[in-house]
Picture 1 (cartoon, rainbow, N blue to C red):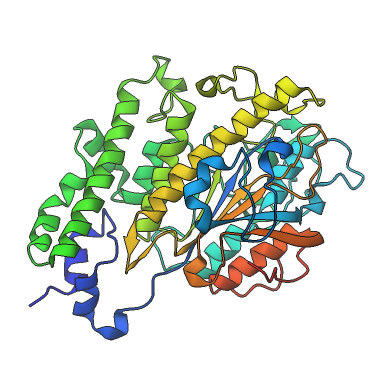
Picture 2: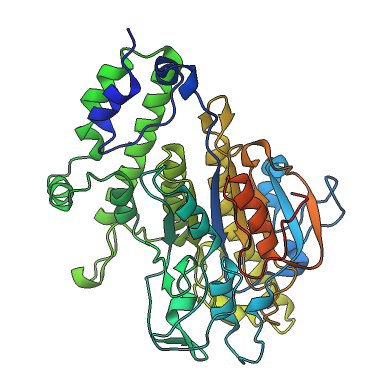
Amino acid sequence: MITPRRTFLKGIAATLALPSLQQLRAAEGAAAAVASPTRMAFIYIPNGVNLDLWRPTGSGAGFAMSKTLEPLADLREHFSVMRGLDHDKAMAHGDGAGDHARANATFLTGCQVRKTAGADIRAGQSVDQIAAHALSGQTRLSSLELSTDPPRSSGNCDSGYSCAYQFNLSWINETTPAPAERDPRLVFEKMFGSGNPKEDARRRIYRKSILDFVMDDAKRMQQRLGSSDRAKVDEYLTATRDVEKRIEQAEKFRTEVPESLRPNGVPDTYSAHIRLMFDMMHLAFQTDTTRVSSFLLAHDGSNHTFDEVGVPSAHHELSHHRGNPQTLEMIGKIDRFYIEQLGYFLRKLRDTEENGKSLLDQSMIVYGGGIADGNRHNHDDLPVLLAGHGGGTLKPGRLIEAPKGTPMTNLYLAMLDRMGVKAQRVGDSTGEFGDV
């Protein structure tokens, strides 16, 4: 007799969620064998791009891959390039300078933010939080917010705009941002911890893995599973252990700074940090810990440097390129660096099976920024990719041209509909974007 899912989960789910297993679903009966859930994620790139290197040529399914997007060539059938999507509310509209703050705060809200450096901030509920609210209670976490930047919620960051706008992508409501976490260790604990801070701290002190708390249950369960499910549990536990070991490695070999100033588990290199955060998002989707996530790769206006790809100059400073060919070449290298990190994440989703399909089949991933050309600070025809198949509701593999003046929030409305979330509007939306 196969142990019912709830019996097994009683011993394991308190600390670790599991991927969907065929045999456990069968044990619960056909009524429980529902389709895999759809996930959505939003990934933000700062400071605009080198548009000449970013934009593909051609049209429809016959578009030619651009130099910047070349690292995604093997994923061509899994994403579309969007053209013509605008964020009008990121424009000044009489508020003067502050395009970086507006770009960040408007990207998921579609709202004109109040220009203030004080506590009276106001934006709007972001698309991810609209979905999180509607899906609340169906997963352990309603949403997962990630960043590589330290959090900031006050102060003047951009021409009279509060730092809350520039360092937060997700907004619970018009006055409350959803702070993102940059420390992979804290993300891991949030996702897989026991919920008891003292117990989790005790485990860290004794260097015990979360998996050690559940491995006996898992091994007993594997003996009762079919070969495919046994392999899947083993693959998942191995992947989770690998992430935990990488976090511990980062903690062990981090640069020596005062303990009060040093974040736990943040790798020394930017690419390793980004990929570890992508691993967190992948695990969150794989285990159905959450179905909604956002990732601020860096805040708009970021002056991050990119020695890993031979660009030691600050990103924001480079973005004001003034048409200089050498500067534009360096911007292109940065753009390609970010695309390579995206490719890492999309391949992990593509290579993870769930109910006969892949996680990428079951996901919708928006990748883009709120500024097109960093020199002009324009917010129209933004650089945007839409990856995944949305549970079979999307038609990727194309260059999609939106009608002139299309709000990006129209795309968000269409995505919410595919999540089963009925929303009348998102920010400045005028209706669902139809051809995705």
